Amino acid sequence: MNHAQLTALGRALRVLGEHGEALTADTPDAKLHEVKADLRRALDLLDESVTGAATTTRCAEHPTGPVDKSAPDLCLLCETRRRAARRAEYGGGRPSADPVPSAPSRYGVRGDRPQPQQRWLPELWNGREWQLCGTPRRDRREAELYLAAQRRGSRPAMAYRLVHEFTDYEVLRVWGTPVQADIEPMGNL
Image (cartoon, rainbow, N blue to C red):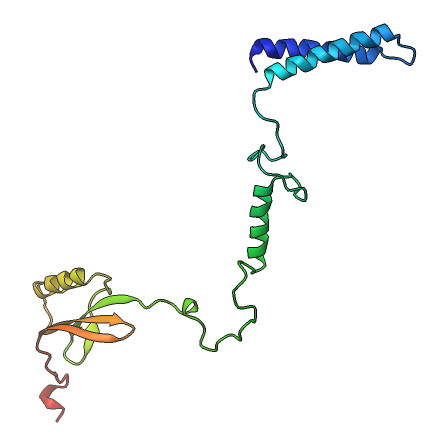
């Protein structure tokens, strides 16, 4: 609607408002015909200014969308979305193909168990046992570079190893030779 149409329509509606205030029980027919002509003029102006299709719903997102009489805003698309949200809220989701509910497993289902983590553990030999010498890494190459830097360091250990942890432990590679060292002097004699 452009400014000229808006101004003309506003003027026609104000004239109708004045007619409405002047109406009484004994208004002559000539005055009623004048009101009818002004009303037609306002409707014609309104028809000229309206360009889009008439709205079928009260929904701001889908004004000309499909209608659902049971929805508060008459919009079928929004009501479908609301119904799906309510169904999911009550744990319904989509109905399963198996109508008979099965008993829950005492071991749970695959989705309930955490996924196994794959890590590489850098370890060093301290003379008695293997101990973790750095943070576990998610990348094997990064863990090997870390151990190479440790071996070149100022105080390298006797031996290093890289352990692959993935639901189980597997020693991948050992650098050096671990030797059992007795911590007591003179061999504990």
